[in-house]
Length: 424
Image 1 (cartoon, rainbow, N blue to C red):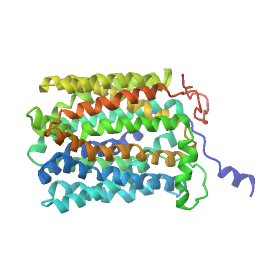
Image 2 (cartoon, one colour):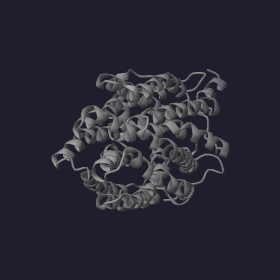
Image 3 (tube, rainbow, N blue to C red):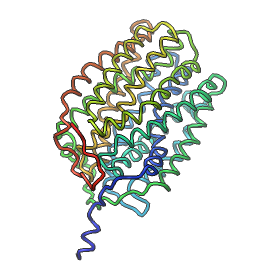
Image 4 (cartoon, helix red, strand yellow):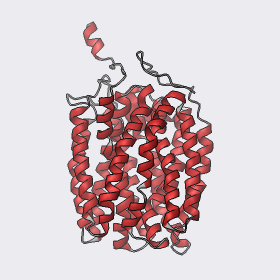
């Protein structure tokens, strides 16, 4: 093999990216967060209309993490070992897209529980395939010192979208269940087009594909043996259980406890993207400049405050304060958590490690969907219980966060001049 061929096997260096790249990537990553918004906001009330109680709603919502256990680790691992003229992740995005669109229209139009559940199954299966392929394109194209700023751009784009969805479409759910899903289908198609045609995937070098049975060993070698990544997986475990217990039943909390409608439950949450729009860029800059861990600690404290407010809320006006503080918490996590985790990932295993997140995020979500509804029903279908569950998960997550050492195993890819060095 000559020197030119050897050179072709080396990963392309990560150079600082332009604002144009950040904006295009931010638009392309919209579905990654938008899928969760659709699932948490609209699937629960649709399911409740069919099954009638919180326990069975949780069973249907549990389909998402159940598929995540299998789909995301496998697709992330396969992506690490894939290279085509189109790229590494794009083939999986394009394969999943049409199935997601079909499910988006069937779910709100279903007239029987069977068709609704089948649509949810298809939706969750291919959303998992799409999500891991979509999210890994950020650390594979953006250098470490710009990743929080990239995440902040994505947060701004998603905040603008959320404001639009909440103010224009969310309240129309009470008139037609189809509107939120039709908008989501349109946005997902446009975002995918930007990602496919606007972002060039960098050649990472072909990695010999071992048999799929070695995937658990690959995860252990590259993820679980890294102390920082293991701690962050545990944080995901606690955070996911608490957050999903709230997210899956929030609209029912508003409808059944505070006496509002689903439309009002969605509309009142508009404060969250408005705050995120204002603070995402400053938080992203602070995370890259002074340390992602510090921003995450700040976000965790804001999350505790938001949970206490939700627990004590007796009116819609009080929920505005909840969303104000939860917006700080969610935005700080969005701009700092995954960018910090990528510092400890080898470049040729980003998909494998990112795809293993569902073992913790999905595991906790699965347990939350199965048990949170049972806990609610055990207290006489008292939806205020979700805030106690959230509070019980936030404290251990905060303690684990303090144990992360950003100085250990910083990303091996400190690159050319202009790439800001992470401060501890």
